[in-house]
Length: 520
Image (cartoon, rainbow, N blue to C red):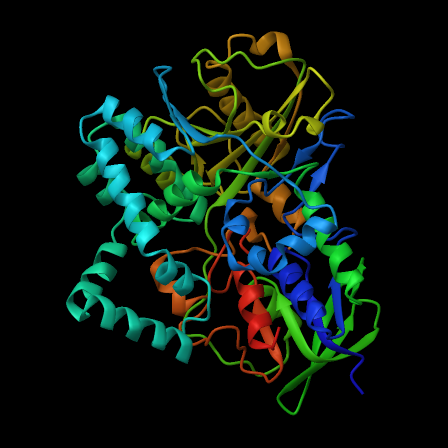
Protein backbone atom coordinates (compact mmCIF):
# COMPACT_ATOMS: atom_id res chain seq x y z
CA UNK A 1 0.00 0.00 0.00
CA UNK A 2 1.25 3.51 -0.85
CA UNK A 3 2.11 5.56 2.19
CA UNK A 4 1.49 8.90 0.43
CA UNK A 5 -0.50 10.22 -2.49
CA UNK A 6 2.47 12.31 -3.61
CA UNK A 7 6.16 12.07 -2.79
CA UNK A 8 8.18 15.09 -3.92
CA UNK A 9 11.97 14.93 -4.27
CA UNK A 10 13.55 18.33 -3.63
CA UNK A 11 12.16 21.46 -2.04
CA UNK A 12 12.77 24.36 -4.43
CA UNK A 13 10.03 26.82 -5.33
CA UNK A 14 8.31 24.46 -7.81
CA UNK A 15 8.29 21.58 -5.33
CA UNK A 16 6.89 23.82 -2.59
CA UNK A 17 4.15 25.19 -4.85
CA UNK A 18 3.12 21.66 -5.89
CA UNK A 19 3.22 20.40 -2.29
CA UNK A 20 1.16 23.34 -1.03
CA UNK A 21 -1.49 22.99 -3.72
CA UNK A 22 -1.78 19.20 -3.47
CA UNK A 23 -1.90 19.23 0.33
CA UNK A 24 -4.51 22.01 0.19
CA UNK A 25 -6.57 19.66 -1.99
CA UNK A 26 -6.50 17.16 0.86
CA UNK A 27 -4.01 14.67 -0.59
CA UNK A 28 -1.25 13.23 1.57
CA UNK A 29 2.09 14.78 0.59
CA UNK A 30 5.68 14.09 1.59
CA UNK A 31 8.55 16.39 0.60
CA UNK A 32 12.06 14.96 1.02
CA UNK A 33 15.11 17.24 0.89
CA UNK A 34 18.73 16.07 1.00
CA UNK A 35 19.97 19.27 2.67
CA UNK A 36 19.27 20.19 6.28
CA UNK A 37 17.01 23.03 5.17
CA UNK A 38 14.25 23.42 2.63
CA UNK A 39 13.90 25.95 -0.16
CA UNK A 40 16.60 25.18 -2.71
CA UNK A 41 17.71 28.63 -3.87
CA UNK A 42 15.46 30.26 -1.24
CA UNK A 43 18.19 30.57 1.37
CA UNK A 44 18.84 33.38 3.84
CA UNK A 45 21.70 33.27 6.34
CA UNK A 46 23.21 35.50 9.01
CA UNK A 47 26.44 33.49 8.84
CA UNK A 48 27.60 34.91 5.50
CA UNK A 49 29.43 38.05 6.63
CA UNK A 50 28.79 39.30 10.19
CA UNK A 51 26.18 38.50 12.86
CA UNK A 52 23.02 40.54 12.37
CA UNK A 53 23.47 40.87 8.61
CA UNK A 54 21.00 38.64 6.76
CA UNK A 55 21.93 37.72 3.19
CA UNK A 56 19.93 35.98 0.46
CA UNK A 57 22.69 33.70 -0.78
CA UNK A 58 21.01 32.85 -4.08
CA UNK A 59 17.49 33.96 -5.12
CA UNK A 60 16.27 37.34 -3.95
CA UNK A 61 13.56 39.02 -6.06
CA UNK A 62 9.98 37.71 -6.27
CA UNK A 63 8.38 39.65 -9.11
CA UNK A 64 7.70 36.44 -11.09
CA UNK A 65 5.97 34.85 -8.11
CA UNK A 66 3.79 37.90 -7.43
CA UNK A 67 2.71 38.07 -11.08
CA UNK A 68 2.26 34.31 -11.53
CA UNK A 69 -0.74 32.00 -11.03
CA UNK A 70 0.75 30.21 -8.01
CA UNK A 71 0.58 33.36 -5.94
CA UNK A 72 -2.99 33.88 -7.04
CA UNK A 73 -3.91 30.48 -5.59
CA UNK A 74 -1.65 30.41 -2.53
CA UNK A 75 -0.89 34.04 -1.70
CA UNK A 76 -3.47 34.59 1.01
CA UNK A 77 -2.68 31.25 2.68
CA UNK A 78 1.06 31.99 2.66
CA UNK A 79 0.44 35.45 4.13
CA UNK A 80 -1.29 33.80 7.08
CA UNK A 81 1.91 31.83 7.66
CA UNK A 82 4.17 34.86 7.65
CA UNK A 83 4.99 35.61 4.02
CA UNK A 84 5.28 39.37 3.58
CA UNK A 85 6.76 41.32 0.68
CA UNK A 86 8.69 44.58 0.81
CA UNK A 87 8.65 47.00 -2.11
CA UNK A 88 10.35 50.04 -3.60
CA UNK A 89 8.80 52.45 -6.11
CA UNK A 90 12.00 52.16 -8.17
CA UNK A 91 12.58 48.51 -9.10
CA UNK A 92 15.67 48.87 -11.28
CA UNK A 93 18.25 51.19 -12.81
CA UNK A 94 21.23 51.11 -15.14
CA UNK A 95 24.44 52.75 -13.91
CA UNK A 96 26.95 53.30 -16.69
CA UNK A 97 30.77 53.60 -16.45
CA UNK A 98 30.62 57.38 -16.99
CA UNK A 99 28.61 57.69 -13.76
CA UNK A 100 25.25 58.44 -15.39
CA UNK A 101 22.14 56.44 -14.49
CA UNK A 102 18.59 55.87 -15.66
CA UNK A 103 16.04 54.75 -13.05
CA UNK A 104 12.79 52.88 -13.74
CA UNK A 105 9.71 53.89 -11.78
CA UNK A 106 6.51 51.94 -11.18
CA UNK A 107 4.70 54.96 -12.67
CA UNK A 108 4.36 54.57 -16.43
CA UNK A 109 3.81 58.26 -17.09
CA UNK A 110 7.00 59.04 -15.16
CA UNK A 111 8.92 56.49 -17.23
CA UNK A 112 7.57 57.84 -20.50
CA UNK A 113 8.72 61.34 -19.54
CA UNK A 114 12.14 60.15 -18.35
CA UNK A 115 12.78 58.08 -21.49
CA UNK A 116 11.61 60.84 -23.83
CA UNK A 117 13.96 63.23 -22.04
CA UNK A 118 16.86 60.95 -23.03
CA UNK A 119 15.78 60.60 -26.66
CA UNK A 120 12.65 61.86 -28.36
CA UNK A 121 10.23 59.01 -28.89
CA UNK A 122 11.88 56.49 -26.53
CA UNK A 123 9.24 57.07 -23.87
CA UNK A 124 6.45 56.66 -26.39
CA UNK A 125 8.07 53.43 -27.58
CA UNK A 126 8.20 52.21 -23.99
CA UNK A 127 4.47 52.87 -23.67
CA UNK A 128 3.90 50.92 -26.89
CA UNK A 129 6.02 47.96 -25.76
CA UNK A 130 4.62 47.52 -22.25
CA UNK A 131 1.16 48.38 -23.51
CA UNK A 132 1.36 45.52 -26.02
CA UNK A 133 2.33 43.08 -23.26
CA UNK A 134 -0.51 44.44 -21.14
CA UNK A 135 -3.04 43.91 -23.94
CA UNK A 136 -1.74 40.40 -24.63
CA UNK A 137 -1.32 39.54 -20.94
CA UNK A 138 -4.17 37.02 -20.78
CA UNK A 139 -2.89 35.15 -23.82
CA UNK A 140 0.82 35.48 -23.05
CA UNK A 141 0.71 34.56 -19.38
CA UNK A 142 -1.72 31.74 -20.09
CA UNK A 143 0.71 30.43 -22.68
CA UNK A 144 3.64 30.66 -20.26
CA UNK A 145 1.62 29.43 -17.30
CA UNK A 146 0.30 26.09 -18.51
CA UNK A 147 1.45 22.90 -20.16
CA UNK A 148 2.15 23.79 -23.78
CA UNK A 149 1.64 20.33 -25.29
CA UNK A 150 -2.02 20.07 -24.35
CA UNK A 151 -5.54 20.50 -25.59
CA UNK A 152 -5.87 23.59 -23.41
CA UNK A 153 -2.89 25.24 -25.11
CA UNK A 154 -4.20 24.26 -28.55
CA UNK A 155 -7.59 25.74 -27.69
CA UNK A 156 -5.91 28.91 -26.43
CA UNK A 157 -4.02 29.20 -29.72
CA UNK A 158 -7.17 28.58 -31.71
CA UNK A 159 -9.05 31.31 -29.83
CA UNK A 160 -6.19 33.76 -30.37
CA UNK A 161 -6.06 32.88 -34.09
CA UNK A 162 -9.79 33.54 -34.32
CA UNK A 163 -9.39 36.81 -32.46
CA UNK A 164 -6.32 38.10 -34.32
CA UNK A 165 -6.45 36.17 -37.56
CA UNK A 166 -3.86 33.64 -38.70
CA UNK A 167 -1.65 36.21 -40.43
CA UNK A 168 -1.42 38.57 -37.45
CA UNK A 169 -0.85 35.61 -35.11
CA UNK A 170 2.01 34.42 -37.31
CA UNK A 171 3.45 37.93 -37.21
CA UNK A 172 3.07 38.02 -33.42
CA UNK A 173 5.11 34.84 -33.02
CA UNK A 174 7.72 36.11 -35.46
CA UNK A 175 8.16 39.29 -33.44
CA UNK A 176 8.22 37.27 -30.23
CA UNK A 177 11.31 35.41 -31.48
CA UNK A 178 13.26 38.66 -31.91
CA UNK A 179 16.55 38.86 -29.93
CA UNK A 180 16.93 41.56 -27.30
CA UNK A 181 19.61 43.27 -29.39
CA UNK A 182 17.27 43.48 -32.37
CA UNK A 183 14.50 44.93 -30.22
CA UNK A 184 16.62 47.52 -28.42
CA UNK A 185 18.70 48.71 -31.37
CA UNK A 186 15.72 49.15 -33.70
CA UNK A 187 13.27 50.67 -31.21
CA UNK A 188 15.33 52.83 -28.82
CA UNK A 189 17.78 55.63 -29.62
CA UNK A 190 19.06 56.40 -26.13
CA UNK A 191 22.07 54.33 -24.97
CA UNK A 192 20.77 54.80 -21.42
CA UNK A 193 17.42 53.16 -22.21
CA UNK A 194 19.21 50.36 -24.05
CA UNK A 195 21.48 49.88 -21.04
CA UNK A 196 18.46 49.74 -18.70
CA UNK A 197 16.98 46.70 -20.45
CA UNK A 198 19.98 44.92 -21.98
CA UNK A 199 21.15 43.12 -18.78
CA UNK A 200 17.73 41.69 -17.98
CA UNK A 201 17.99 39.09 -20.72
CA UNK A 202 20.76 37.46 -18.64
CA UNK A 203 18.26 36.86 -15.83
CA UNK A 204 16.30 34.47 -18.02
CA UNK A 205 19.42 32.54 -19.00
CA UNK A 206 19.79 34.16 -22.44
CA UNK A 207 22.15 36.62 -24.15
CA UNK A 208 21.36 39.74 -26.19
CA UNK A 209 21.63 37.75 -29.44
CA UNK A 210 19.45 34.78 -28.38
CA UNK A 211 16.05 34.17 -29.98
CA UNK A 212 12.96 35.36 -28.08
CA UNK A 213 15.12 37.52 -25.78
CA UNK A 214 13.32 40.65 -26.93
CA UNK A 215 9.92 39.32 -25.93
CA UNK A 216 11.18 38.08 -22.56
CA UNK A 217 12.73 41.50 -21.94
CA UNK A 218 9.43 43.20 -22.75
CA UNK A 219 7.64 40.85 -20.34
CA UNK A 220 10.18 41.75 -17.65
CA UNK A 221 9.76 45.47 -18.38
CA UNK A 222 6.00 45.12 -17.97
CA UNK A 223 6.32 43.04 -14.78
CA UNK A 224 8.84 45.38 -13.13
CA UNK A 225 6.73 48.44 -13.89
CA UNK A 226 3.55 46.73 -12.69
CA UNK A 227 4.79 44.77 -9.67
CA UNK A 228 8.25 46.16 -8.89
CA UNK A 229 11.15 44.06 -7.64
CA UNK A 230 9.85 42.89 -4.25
CA UNK A 231 11.87 41.01 -1.65
CA UNK A 232 10.57 38.89 1.21
CA UNK A 233 10.61 40.47 4.65
CA UNK A 234 13.36 38.74 6.59
CA UNK A 235 14.86 37.15 3.48
CA UNK A 236 13.97 34.60 0.81
CA UNK A 237 14.36 31.83 3.37
CA UNK A 238 11.23 33.16 5.07
CA UNK A 239 9.27 32.27 1.93
CA UNK A 240 10.42 28.66 2.30
CA UNK A 241 9.44 28.73 5.98
CA UNK A 242 5.96 30.03 5.09
CA UNK A 243 5.53 27.27 2.52
CA UNK A 244 6.58 24.62 5.02
CA UNK A 245 4.16 25.98 7.61
CA UNK A 246 1.34 25.93 5.05
CA UNK A 247 2.13 22.42 3.84
CA UNK A 248 2.24 21.08 7.39
CA UNK A 249 -0.95 22.95 8.33
CA UNK A 250 -2.59 21.16 5.40
CA UNK A 251 -1.46 17.80 6.80
CA UNK A 252 1.62 17.42 4.59
CA UNK A 253 5.04 16.29 5.78
CA UNK A 254 8.45 17.84 5.10
CA UNK A 255 11.60 15.87 5.90
CA UNK A 256 15.09 17.37 5.58
CA UNK A 257 18.36 15.47 5.60
CA UNK A 258 16.72 12.72 3.54
CA UNK A 259 18.44 11.97 0.24
CA UNK A 260 16.46 10.12 -2.40
CA UNK A 261 18.93 7.64 -3.88
CA UNK A 262 16.73 5.66 -6.28
CA UNK A 263 13.21 5.81 -7.69
CA UNK A 264 11.50 2.43 -7.46
CA UNK A 265 10.09 1.38 -10.84
CA UNK A 266 7.80 -1.64 -11.02
CA UNK A 267 6.26 -2.72 -14.31
CA UNK A 268 6.94 0.65 -15.90
CA UNK A 269 5.42 2.59 -13.02
CA UNK A 270 7.02 4.65 -10.23
CA UNK A 271 5.89 3.43 -6.82
CA UNK A 272 8.28 5.19 -4.44
CA UNK A 273 11.91 5.81 -3.56
CA UNK A 274 14.81 4.29 -1.71
CA UNK A 275 16.76 6.76 0.42
CA UNK A 276 20.51 6.89 0.98
CA UNK A 277 19.84 5.20 4.35
CA UNK A 278 18.04 2.33 2.65
CA UNK A 279 14.52 3.40 3.67
CA UNK A 280 11.73 2.53 1.22
CA UNK A 281 8.98 5.14 0.96
CA UNK A 282 6.01 4.32 -1.26
CA UNK A 283 3.66 6.74 -3.00
CA UNK A 284 1.03 6.82 -5.74
CA UNK A 285 2.89 9.63 -7.51
CA UNK A 286 6.59 10.48 -7.44
CA UNK A 287 7.51 14.05 -8.39
CA UNK A 288 11.15 14.86 -9.06
CA UNK A 289 12.11 18.53 -8.76
CA UNK A 290 15.61 17.97 -10.08
CA UNK A 291 17.95 18.70 -12.96
CA UNK A 292 17.66 16.14 -15.81
CA UNK A 293 21.00 14.56 -14.97
CA UNK A 294 20.00 14.00 -11.35
CA UNK A 295 16.84 12.29 -12.51
CA UNK A 296 17.79 10.18 -15.52
CA UNK A 297 21.42 9.41 -14.70
CA UNK A 298 21.04 9.24 -10.93
CA UNK A 299 17.61 8.41 -9.52
CA UNK A 300 16.72 6.25 -12.53
CA UNK A 301 20.18 4.73 -13.05
CA UNK A 302 19.84 1.17 -14.32
CA UNK A 303 16.33 1.70 -15.68
CA UNK A 304 15.64 1.70 -19.41
CA UNK A 305 14.73 5.33 -19.93
CA UNK A 306 13.64 6.96 -23.18
CA UNK A 307 16.90 8.05 -24.80
CA UNK A 308 16.98 11.75 -25.79
CA UNK A 309 18.46 12.55 -29.18
CA UNK A 310 21.05 14.86 -27.61
CA UNK A 311 22.59 15.61 -24.24
CA UNK A 312 20.97 18.29 -22.11
CA UNK A 313 23.17 21.39 -21.89
CA UNK A 314 23.67 23.55 -18.85
CA UNK A 315 24.28 27.27 -19.14
CA UNK A 316 26.68 29.81 -17.70
CA UNK A 317 27.46 29.83 -14.02
CA UNK A 318 26.45 32.43 -11.47
CA UNK A 319 28.76 34.36 -9.15
CA UNK A 320 27.47 35.88 -5.91
CA UNK A 321 29.09 38.58 -3.78
CA UNK A 322 27.73 39.86 -0.46
CA UNK A 323 28.75 42.81 1.69
CA UNK A 324 28.14 43.96 5.24
CA UNK A 325 28.50 47.75 5.36
CA UNK A 326 28.98 50.12 8.28
CA UNK A 327 26.55 52.79 7.16
CA UNK A 328 24.42 54.23 4.38
CA UNK A 329 25.75 53.98 0.83
CA UNK A 330 26.69 57.29 -0.80
CA UNK A 331 26.25 56.71 -4.52
CA UNK A 332 28.26 59.11 -6.67
CA UNK A 333 25.22 59.36 -8.92
CA UNK A 334 22.12 60.69 -7.22
CA UNK A 335 18.72 59.01 -7.29
CA UNK A 336 19.86 55.46 -6.59
CA UNK A 337 19.25 55.25 -2.84
CA UNK A 338 15.96 53.34 -2.98
CA UNK A 339 16.49 51.39 -6.23
CA UNK A 340 15.99 47.66 -5.64
CA UNK A 341 18.30 46.32 -8.38
CA UNK A 342 21.02 48.34 -10.13
CA UNK A 343 22.88 46.98 -13.15
CA UNK A 344 26.41 48.24 -13.69
CA UNK A 345 26.82 48.10 -17.45
CA UNK A 346 27.53 50.26 -20.48
CA UNK A 347 24.77 48.71 -22.59
CA UNK A 348 24.08 46.06 -25.20
CA UNK A 349 27.63 45.57 -26.45
CA UNK A 350 28.99 45.39 -22.90
CA UNK A 351 26.42 42.77 -21.89
CA UNK A 352 27.04 40.82 -25.09
CA UNK A 353 30.81 40.90 -24.59
CA UNK A 354 30.73 39.74 -20.97
CA UNK A 355 28.23 36.93 -21.60
CA UNK A 356 30.15 35.79 -24.69
CA UNK A 357 33.40 35.69 -22.72
CA UNK A 358 31.71 33.59 -20.02
CA UNK A 359 30.21 31.22 -22.56
CA UNK A 360 33.70 30.68 -23.98
CA UNK A 361 35.01 29.80 -20.53
CA UNK A 362 36.68 33.14 -19.87
CA UNK A 363 36.43 35.31 -16.77
CA UNK A 364 34.79 38.46 -18.17
CA UNK A 365 37.10 41.47 -18.26
CA UNK A 366 34.16 43.73 -17.34
CA UNK A 367 31.35 41.52 -16.00
CA UNK A 368 27.74 42.62 -15.96
CA UNK A 369 26.98 43.30 -12.29
CA UNK A 370 23.54 43.31 -10.66
CA UNK A 371 23.53 45.11 -7.30
CA UNK A 372 20.67 44.60 -4.86
CA UNK A 373 20.01 46.86 -1.87
CA UNK A 374 17.60 44.68 0.14
CA UNK A 375 18.00 46.74 3.32
CA UNK A 376 16.42 49.72 1.55
CA UNK A 377 13.24 47.68 1.07
CA UNK A 378 13.51 45.62 4.26
CA UNK A 379 15.35 47.27 7.18
CA UNK A 380 15.27 43.99 9.15
CA UNK A 381 18.12 42.66 6.97
CA UNK A 382 20.81 44.42 9.06
CA UNK A 383 21.38 46.38 12.27
CA UNK A 384 19.97 49.91 12.34
CA UNK A 385 22.17 52.37 10.49
CA UNK A 386 24.05 49.61 8.61
CA UNK A 387 23.61 48.27 5.08
CA UNK A 388 23.91 45.08 3.04
CA UNK A 389 24.58 44.55 -0.64
CA UNK A 390 23.64 41.52 -2.75
CA UNK A 391 25.64 41.22 -5.97
CA UNK A 392 24.86 38.75 -8.73
CA UNK A 393 27.12 38.25 -11.73
CA UNK A 394 25.03 36.20 -14.20
CA UNK A 395 27.85 35.63 -16.68
CA UNK A 396 30.49 33.58 -14.91
CA UNK A 397 31.98 30.45 -16.52
CA UNK A 398 31.56 27.08 -14.82
CA UNK A 399 34.69 25.67 -16.49
CA UNK A 400 37.49 28.20 -16.84
CA UNK A 401 39.69 28.45 -19.94
CA UNK A 402 41.31 31.77 -19.13
CA UNK A 403 40.88 35.39 -18.11
CA UNK A 404 39.62 37.78 -20.79
CA UNK A 405 41.62 40.61 -19.21
CA UNK A 406 44.81 38.55 -18.95
CA UNK A 407 45.26 39.52 -15.30
CA UNK A 408 44.09 36.55 -13.22
CA UNK A 409 46.03 33.29 -13.15
CA UNK A 410 43.40 30.67 -13.93
CA UNK A 411 42.90 26.95 -13.49
CA UNK A 412 40.35 24.67 -15.12
CA UNK A 413 38.18 24.73 -12.01
CA UNK A 414 37.31 27.48 -9.55
CA UNK A 415 39.76 27.87 -6.70
CA UNK A 416 39.60 30.15 -3.69
CA UNK A 417 42.36 32.35 -5.13
CA UNK A 418 40.52 32.73 -8.46
CA UNK A 419 37.24 33.44 -6.71
CA UNK A 420 38.75 36.21 -4.60
CA UNK A 421 40.68 37.70 -7.53
CA UNK A 422 37.47 37.85 -9.58
CA UNK A 423 35.68 39.34 -6.57
CA UNK A 424 38.39 42.01 -6.40
CA UNK A 425 37.67 42.90 -10.05
CA UNK A 426 33.95 43.21 -9.34
CA UNK A 427 34.54 45.23 -6.18
CA UNK A 428 36.80 47.63 -8.04
CA UNK A 429 34.02 48.39 -10.53
CA UNK A 430 31.45 48.81 -7.74
CA UNK A 431 33.66 50.96 -5.49
CA UNK A 432 34.23 53.48 -8.28
CA UNK A 433 30.54 54.43 -8.01
CA UNK A 434 30.37 54.77 -4.19
CA UNK A 435 32.11 57.76 -2.64
CA UNK A 436 32.36 56.40 0.92
CA UNK A 437 33.21 52.79 0.04
CA UNK A 438 36.48 52.58 1.96
CA UNK A 439 34.83 53.97 5.10
CA UNK A 440 31.80 51.68 5.19
CA UNK A 441 33.09 48.33 3.95
CA UNK A 442 33.12 45.82 6.81
CA UNK A 443 33.23 42.34 5.30
CA UNK A 444 32.51 40.54 2.04
CA UNK A 445 31.75 36.96 1.08
CA UNK A 446 32.03 35.58 -2.45
CA UNK A 447 30.48 32.42 -3.89
CA UNK A 448 31.84 31.02 -7.15
CA UNK A 449 29.74 28.83 -9.47
CA UNK A 450 31.48 25.83 -7.88
CA UNK A 451 30.48 27.00 -4.40
CA UNK A 452 26.84 27.36 -5.48
CA UNK A 453 26.86 23.91 -7.12
CA UNK A 454 28.16 22.43 -3.88
CA UNK A 455 25.32 24.08 -1.95
CA UNK A 456 22.59 22.90 -4.33
CA UNK A 457 22.95 19.74 -6.43
CA UNK A 458 20.55 21.13 -9.05
CA UNK A 459 22.81 24.10 -9.81
CA UNK A 460 24.98 22.07 -12.15
CA UNK A 461 28.18 24.02 -12.78
CA UNK A 462 26.64 26.90 -10.86
CA UNK A 463 23.92 27.33 -13.50
CA UNK A 464 20.88 28.80 -11.66
CA UNK A 465 18.53 28.54 -14.64
CA UNK A 466 18.14 24.77 -14.79
CA UNK A 467 19.98 24.46 -18.10
CA UNK A 468 20.66 26.58 -21.15
CA UNK A 469 17.47 28.40 -22.13
CA UNK A 470 18.17 28.53 -25.85
CA UNK A 471 15.24 27.87 -28.18
CA UNK A 472 16.19 24.22 -28.88
CA UNK A 473 15.61 23.29 -25.23
CA UNK A 474 12.85 25.64 -24.17
CA UNK A 475 9.05 25.83 -24.42
CA UNK A 476 7.74 22.47 -25.76
CA UNK A 477 11.33 21.25 -26.14
CA UNK A 478 12.32 21.63 -22.47
CA UNK A 479 14.25 19.73 -21.25
CA UNK A 480 14.24 17.33 -24.24
CA UNK A 481 12.57 17.65 -27.61
CA UNK A 482 10.80 14.33 -27.14
CA UNK A 483 9.53 14.97 -23.62
CA UNK A 484 5.87 15.88 -23.24
CA UNK A 485 5.22 18.39 -20.47
CA UNK A 486 6.15 16.84 -17.10
CA UNK A 487 6.05 13.22 -18.30
CA UNK A 488 9.13 11.00 -17.99
CA UNK A 489 8.28 7.79 -19.83
CA UNK A 490 7.24 6.09 -16.58
CA UNK A 491 3.70 6.13 -15.22
CA UNK A 492 3.20 8.22 -12.08
CA UNK A 493 6.69 9.74 -12.31
CA UNK A 494 6.64 13.47 -12.99
CA UNK A 495 9.46 15.95 -13.61
CA UNK A 496 9.26 19.60 -12.47
CA UNK A 497 11.71 22.41 -11.74
CA UNK A 498 13.65 25.03 -13.67
CA UNK A 499 14.68 22.42 -16.25
CA UNK A 500 11.04 22.01 -17.32
CA UNK A 501 8.49 24.39 -18.83
CA UNK A 502 8.02 27.30 -18.13
CA UNK A 503 11.68 27.39 -17.11
CA UNK A 504 13.67 29.23 -14.43
CA UNK A 505 12.67 31.91 -11.98
CA UNK A 506 10.66 32.09 -8.77
CA UNK A 507 7.24 31.79 -10.43
CA UNK A 508 6.73 28.16 -9.43
CA UNK A 509 5.13 27.54 -12.82
CA UNK A 510 5.97 23.88 -13.38
CA UNK A 511 4.90 22.96 -9.85
CA UNK A 512 1.64 24.84 -10.41
CA UNK A 513 1.00 23.18 -13.79
CA UNK A 514 1.56 19.68 -12.45
CA UNK A 515 -0.53 20.24 -9.35
CA UNK A 516 -3.42 21.41 -11.54
CA UNK A 517 -2.99 18.34 -13.74
CA UNK A 518 -3.16 16.14 -10.64
CA UNK A 519 -6.44 17.70 -9.61
CA UNK A 520 -5.43 20.55 -7.29
